[in-house]
Image (tube, rainbow, N blue to C red; front, side, top):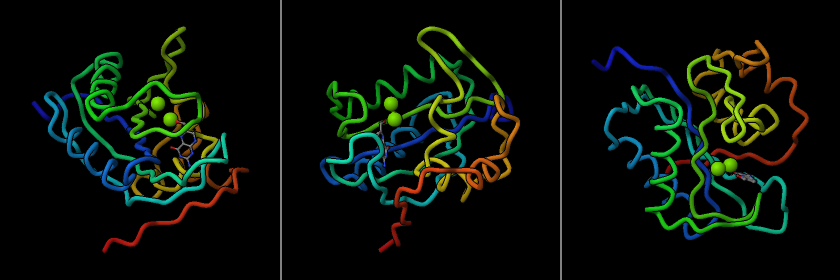
Length: 167
Ligand code: PH2
Ligand code: MG
Ligand code: MG
């Protein structure tokens, strides 16, 4: 059963209320979900905020899963984990206790009004590509036909991304 399904990648981020613990908790909850198998998690990184610079540093990571859930079911699951962890509505780019973004879902490219896959900003963000490449640099971005390593090599974002050395 677990040999079926689709490989997907999820971006994890937090910059409130002990961000490292929030990210770890989110990974635990993803791993505990039904119809989903957590395969790998990158290191955690302390990252300079992108968008609104007047806020605390984020902690970011990326995880790889295999799942039988469809796109919308998977996004609904991520949203429910965010809500259960106490996420409030916040302004775009602003501080958040947890942010779970679907980055890639197999090699699917989806452009619907309320659903865009791959994540429309992922290729521009060092805080996504550095953890992604640590884990799976060979994965091809299905809309560009370029590997994660290739996207990182071409990246213009120079914001600080530092691996958190595990205690
Ligand atoms: N998320 C944002 C906006 N800016 N910056 C960093 N470093 N990490 C994030 O996860 C992040 C951000 C909106 O989702
Ligand atoms: Mg986000
Ligand atoms: Mg989000």
